[in-house]
Amino acid sequence: MPDARDRDEALVHTIYQEHGRALLAYATRLTGDRATAEDVVQETLIRAWRHPEVLTNGKGSTRGWLLTVVRNLVTDRFRAKAARPQEVAENPDAPPMVRDHADSVVASVTVMAALDELSEDHRGVLDQIYFQGRSLGEAATALGIPAGTVKSRSYYALRALRASLQRDGEPAENGVPA
Image (cartoon, rainbow, N blue to C red; front, side, top):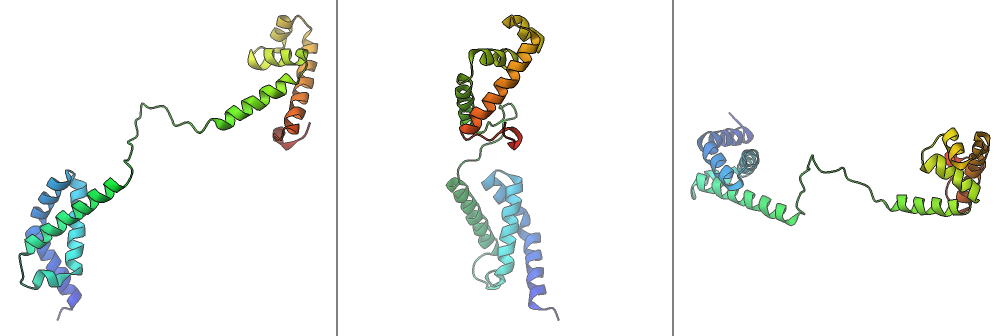
């Protein structure tokens, strides 16, 4: 003899065979989306399985009860979605999201202040090499000094810059003090 669980499962299976198409059509019409409608029908059948007494009590129409459950589930989903912030669809043409640029602004201001502490000769060499993108030879020609002087000035300028940044609380490059 089948137990109560087997009877309930058989009842839900029978209900799905008899009312499944109507439930899916109604849910699709309410939601406008087939996948969402299928989820709603599945939840409706789970509720029918949890409360089989409602389906077998002889009061009212089984289809009416099922359609009411579908309508209530769709209403609940609509209300829950309205309560959440609107989802933003990704636009493949949109530029990638940029993190807060405050850190880079602070770093730029800190470096510019440290550059102001350097001598004019050291600042000029760093400007030519790093900001103008010139090689040692090109920087030497632009500044009218020998390439060896450009090399030594860049070494001492970077060393002084690193020391200045360490005094201001910035970590040294690779954690190694100058």
